[in-house]
View 1 (cartoon, rainbow, N blue to C red):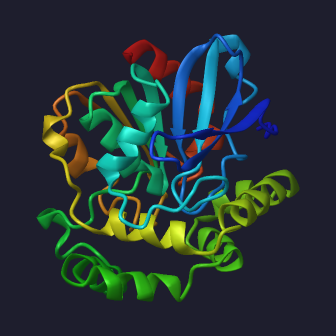
View 2 (cartoon, rainbow, N blue to C red):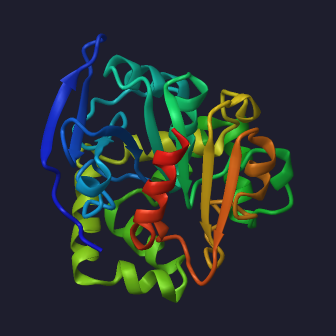
Length: 284
């Protein structure tokens, strides 16, 4: 595992005047792959950077509104995020969504912007009826609150929205196989930096993203007509990823393939970056 700083870093002004922070790794003329990162991260933490030159991939990280270098947008929806991506002329890219980045990756596909999608340890649509009895009580309560009183849900999420708590929860909710990754000095330093960058404007961006993730998604997953690969580690017990390791998602997506990786947890993005990216290229 090699974690490199972005090779290119910048900010673009969107048509409505908001700033959108971005980063890139790999050859500038490579196949564009948009990376929708996890909860509250800034754009500086990538994955598979040692594979990008070999595969000819230009990996693009974007700060979602209110995170890192991107302006806040309190009324932004998941589909509004897709329009931000469209404004960057990234139509026709492949998309990777990790953890809470999954609904943002799906939004791009639903808006016709993606040629193929890889969801890695992805946040499921927890408001789907299939999960009514499958979620821990605390998560179930937040899902219900997001549907019935989004402002109250935002206040509840804000109570634990800071970089130190996010880091602690990420480690504590992970199996030992993941803690070996997250506890390495290189990853720990990079992850702390990404969270510090992501929360530089305060918790608002993370809170907004979390409520959007917990709420019913504003698009029909079953209408997504591009290839989707779902990657889950069989040891991943984080219920906000997917209570059934993507089985419900796979059944709803017409062109999905589900990969349940044995003896692995939620850190697949760094332990299996090569196969994930190689598979994505064959599907686009």
